[in-house]
Image (cartoon, rainbow, N blue to C red; front, side, top):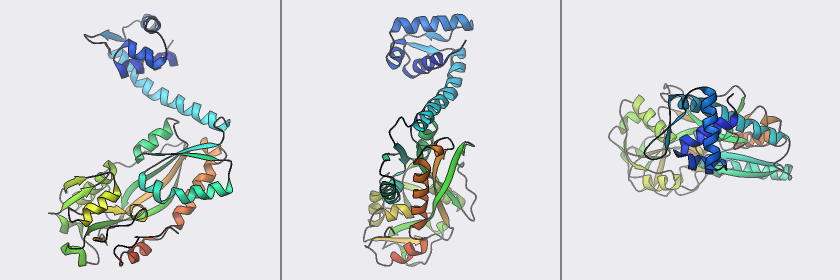
Length: 327
């Protein structure tokens, strides 16, 4: 009784709020959309949409159908993507979604290795934060997602962990240390390591939503809420702001490996050790696609060969030099 086209219709109506908008989305005429909706309502025995002063809205029954559409349509899209990849319909193209510093510091060497060993494979790289990358993978809009999760040895993580689906393959590429970035003039810049609780009254610079969540988590465990005075997704700008004395910030290894830090910046390890686990993710079905598993293995091997946190720590003695060189 309920077909995939009906679920797509309900999703389009909810998205645009008008039958004409839904018609454009689905490539149909408005009369065809109206007839399709009327037939579906007749079969189900209840109205699914109601007219408003401007457009239409879903009824309670329509919202039930929308909820199921939100579960079914992404799954179907993902199945179509996996089948197309297995059948080789993309001509050897692998789509990767990755966060910015991972794309800058980790992927170039891994993809260069793939280009040498498997010249028939091409890549399309898109930048997205972790949650979005996983969503793209689960909707079938990429084959590989490069993601990260924060964790700690001695602190309970207050942010919810990422969902790991049972039909996915997760491989750890590297474990990053989290560093405290501050101006050379900061009173704590002479310390070997810094207790977060000593920064209760400090101004903070935060990055992306996940990075900010980690910052709030670290400070909350230390007993205070951070005073965030600057927010930027640009990790180069973040380093510059910290070096200029406008606040302190938390930076993982990859952000420091991807670019030179400002000459006025000092990097210190935290007393409360904090880490960022970088993982490469695909589905079990996509892992059977030629090139996908090899690409994942290349990323993991490159990640495990990057300079260890001790090497980064030694390199910060010369402020103004690269924090670390890619191996």
